[in-house]
Structure formats: C-alpha cells, structure tokens
Image 1 (cartoon, rainbow, N blue to C red):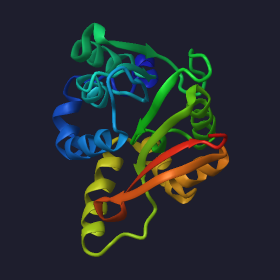
Image 2 (image 1 turned 30 degrees about the vertical axis):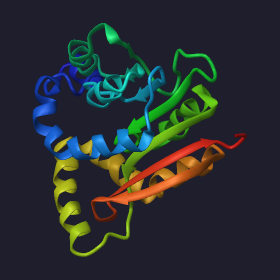
Image 3 (image 1 turned 90 degrees about the horizontal axis):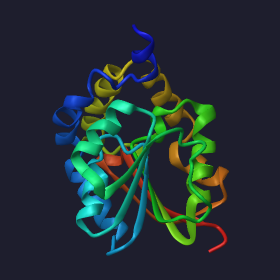
Image 4 (image 1 turned 90 degrees about the vertical axis):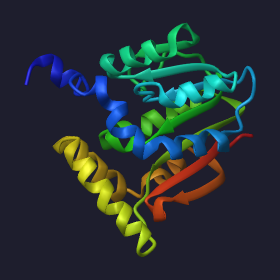
Length: 215
C-alpha cells in the first residue's frame, strides 16, 4: 500500500462510492433530512461529508452548506457534485477551522463509528462547539441493539459484511463503537441534551437530534 493510500483509504473507491453505497442509504438520507426540518438560509455543516450526498439534499432546501472530510478523494467528488454552492474543506473534524456557534445544524451521518475511539469524543465536542446555542446536532449511526426479530437481524446480516469489506481497521472501530454504547456515550460525554430519538433498520441505526445543554 502506498503512502497516499494509507492517508486516503477512499482514493480507490471514491469514484464509484455512490454507486455501491447509495442504494442502501438513499431512503435513510431523505428521512434524516426531513427530520432536520431544513429551511431557506439555514447554515448546515456536515462532519464526514463524503461525496456530498446529504449536503445536496440540504442545498435543494435552500440551505447554506459546508462540509468537512479527511479524504481528498471524497471531497473531490463532492465538489464536482455540489459546485460552488458548497464550502468544502479537507480537514480533521477534531480541530475544525470554524468559529464558535457558526452553524444552525451540524450533521454526522454514519461517520463517528469509523473513527478510532480516542477521536470520537473530541469530534463530538467540536460539533457541539460550532453549533449555535439555539441550534441542533443531528447524529445518525449504528446502534448496539437490541435488534428486532427478524427485521433487525436481517439488516445486521447486511451491515456486518459491508463493514468488514471496508477494511480491518474500519471494522475494528465499528465494533468498538458499539461496545462503547454508540451515540449515547458521545452525547453524555459532551453534556448534550437529546431532543428526539428514533431507531430504524430494526434497531440497527439510531437517529438523535440533540442540542447544547445550555439551551
């Protein structure tokens, strides 16, 4: 593996990522954007924006969109997709180049489970820092269960091979995320208040809308 591949593991798959992944995520993305209740002029940041699939939906609603991702290859795809309508940055979500209270909505979509354990809490803290005091965090990620039978176990049977195919380190982070109780641990660790919660895919995926505790 080359040095560039190590620093950007999505280099080889970015060009066809949407073709492979989007059939599984399309309905969930639309549900999540609807739950966020976007409005004209809303300032939206997505952490781990990937190819910009979510941001495109927010842009369609008239939002001002910003995305951060570590992968230059994924950002390149997002730029081609979103054009000049988006402010897209290659960068570390644990140290984002934005002022405090900059965004009305900060989104993470199936992103936090990919990160090593020591990184997740600082990333969630950064998300809480850059959201406005009357703003919201929208966090979507895998949940440790219990899973509803049979639907939840069918979905789990689909999710696990996909996570394994993403690589050994990716799957290790995925398992660790679940063992540490997923999103609730990050919410509690940053003093956030959960406003809404929903489980989909038979209990495999948790959707949280949270706010800074001071609101």
